[in-house]
Image 1 (cartoon, rainbow, N blue to C red):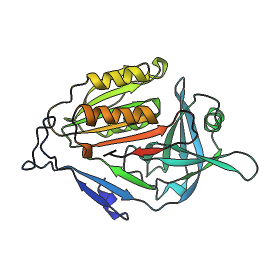
Image 2: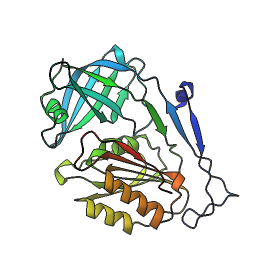
Image 3: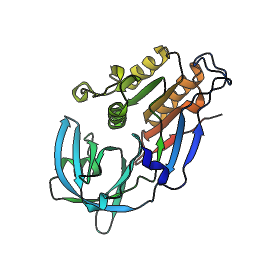
Image 4: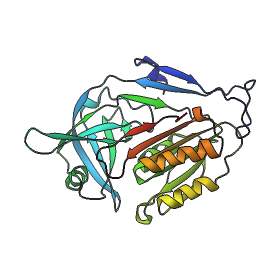
Length: 272
């Protein structure tokens, strides 16, 4: 990730912990980790479907390619691009997706589409075939979380699965990850990683929240990340920070969707 410093508007957040019984750090023991907010040039790119693959019953991976990807940058595992789908005469609809994999040399970008329901994006992904074209925009920016935290907590539902899978692949040997995922049994998969990882698969949001409440956070200075339905992600943040005393500067929570809403994406900030 060394090339990200060449992009515009980089903000560095020094993750120094204040006295905290959970992390064990004090103001005299600063944590060296730095979270970076990076802005990218916002542009739309016309890409072509190279191939498709069914990852599981409700997930389809579409690999896009083209020279328009020559300057594409995705510096963080939870980046999102907006895919624009035709919705009638001169009308397009945008939906947010995680760049699951990007190969700059090959000019290839993988996006995993959830096939739940009969929405516009799911319908497009179901019929996607080699040679079709699509327009994507972004990422607008990246929130780069270093891999050298003492531990990483990753929590979410199936919409968070592509980001979690990418993060685990990025973590180096010797790192530690704790994963809580609410995913249908048919869509659970092997998660590749060099890290020491424990994974709990949960059947519903109630079980996910219960698992978060029951979790004992490890010693050391860790980073928590959670994403999913808006109310569940907000409650996960409240549990991790409010109930467990985790440093509010060392967590990122995002609403990837909201019950009853369309095309909802929101980063959940510290409510204080």
